[in-house]
Image (cartoon, rainbow, N blue to C red; front, side, top):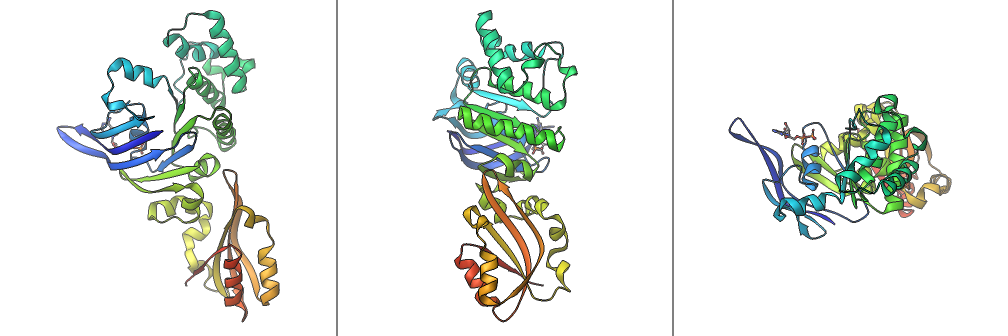
Amino acid sequence: MIRFVDVHKSYRVDGKDISALQPFNLDIADGEVFGIIGHSGAGKSTLIRLINLLERPSGGSVLIDEVDLTRLDDRALRDQRRHIGMIFQHFNLLSSQTVAANIAFPLRLAGSHDEEAIASRVAELLERVGLSAHRDKYPSQLSGGQKQRVGIARALANRPSILLCDEATSALDPQTTASVLELLAQINRDLKLTIVLITHEMDVVRRVCDRVAVLDAGRIVEHGSVADVFLHPKHETTRRFVDEALPEEAAGGAALYAHVPGRILRLSFRGEATWSPTLGRVTRETGVDFNILAGRIDRIKDLPYGQLTLAMQGEGTDRALGALRAAGIEVEEMTR
Ligand code: ADP
């Protein structure tokens, strides 16, 4: 659906070209939630703004449903942009307008004059984002989470097929972040629209995204399904994002367990394997002992997964590792 072909982007600053994005190719599929993660200055905002051509690429093509946006005239581009909604970190609401007027704004901008139709569409959108009771309030009377819900309703007004989210939860507390992400996931499910979000938090990616690209200094250093990238990070930058999940271990590495007897193993499992009592069965069958040192059992979007760090002792350890692997558990031995 969204395709970048040999796209790159430089900004001209004081007569010099400063590269923001190195040439890259990327496909984002219809109906998926695609995350772009990177540190500040990595090029995330530039990349997401290429999708609606708020930034023009310095070279290459940006295609949506096979239409090359870079070749459209102003009028055709305006039409294309109606299919793309966007929400922002700081909401960008009109402070002098009510919630309802903010949501109606893009409808009026698109040329709608039918007041009844506008009112009914606004009511429907308010209901979807859970703000029906707040229609006549002004943005200053709303919490951050409610403001972002208005932003989402406004972005959906013209029934876009793509929703771009520019650090949409970065200004919100963790609990509000979770509820806004849940709303985005629900919208993705119900309306089947494609969501592209940029963030500097791996947890945002883990909760809602299907696939992710990791940006580092203007380069996509890794991309793939969130489960693959999260459980098997290859690039150093990805590793650091992922290590937010087991921060103590990331900081100390295997050295943390220098005095722990036995072999130090890191087990990763996902999907159905999460619910099987495999570890118990294998240790019983092989007679090994184990001790859990660190761990996390959680979900990557809807996929259950777990990561456990164990110390294992006993003559049957090699056999136990073989049996764990045979049961679909990934086992990595940490050297120390
Ligand atoms: P991120 O969103 O990951 O923080 P950006 O896309 O904002 O990264 O920026 C990528 C690089 O491009 C940075 O080095 C930034 O300074 C530069 N940059 C971004 N926008 C502009 C601009 N309008 N003019 C000049 N340089 C810019």
